Length: 364
Ligand SMILES: Cc1ncc(COP(=O)(O)O)c(C=O)c1O
Image 1: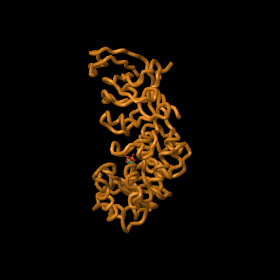
Image 2: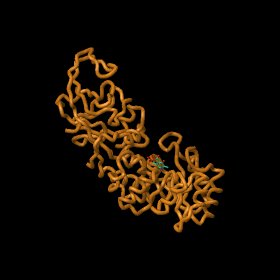
Image 3: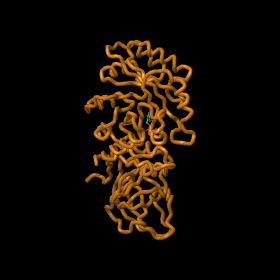
Image 4: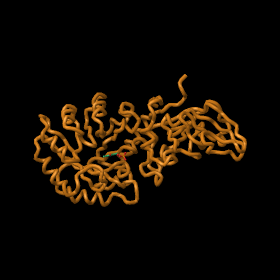
């Protein structure tokens, strides 16, 4: 009998969230961003739900190959472009579109022998200061690319640093527009936060949006807005069961470091889930959790394979009761991953990506 922990991937929810991206940015084409093995969900597992997208965005050439193996013939965009010259051979062979964000990538293209010119996305650094040509270098890079026989069509893109927060995107949109106004080609600017918050603005949704996190059912601007506000559904559930019960008396403590001390008699459950499953150790007492679909809280420190939950609000719970760490619980209950991430001082992205390999994953 394996440990009772498992993760479920909800194909219907993923498909619903992709439709939400389309609604939020009407007329735009949608890149389903599936980097980091589809944000920890597994490229093969999300493929059926996301094949309604117009293309897939990712980083890793091996992941691009996996998509082609699955039968995807449409666009695939390498969001960081190629990492070395020979990657261009794979781009030619698999017809991958790639971001060009630095001079070295143009040099490699200029030296690349191909009979099929490449579709490239030239990236402007409009303020994120991660990848992309500085504003003063951008048009020179475009002219260089435009002169290369290896290049077919040049699209234009940038990435927002503050789409989820108060600084917003207007300054980056303005710079992008100034620098690209008279250039031909498709445009791509918006991630999930920009799509949800600004997708109705034509300059923001542009020709393509690049939605990642919202498609997996996490609100990019949590806690300002939650998934209910954006009508998103969790794409992943992490669930387990109660494998031990304890009755505490006032003064009794729980777990390593005795960080929680009972003040009144309490009934607690021990759950088969710990940080070796990808549940964050930083989640302290009070992190929300569902037992039999009823909302309660964790108590004390998370250990490698177990954590404790307060059974006060769920008196009928007992040995074997279902525990939802995040995602969909019984009876239509939902615990957004964002709430757990917040308790750990992080974001939903990190929790999804950190699901441990030892957790069995099935399609729901
Ligand atoms: C270039 C680029 N576009 C789009 C995305 C998708 O972002 P999000 O998951 O916030 O929608 C990412 C992810 O970080 C990215 O790096």
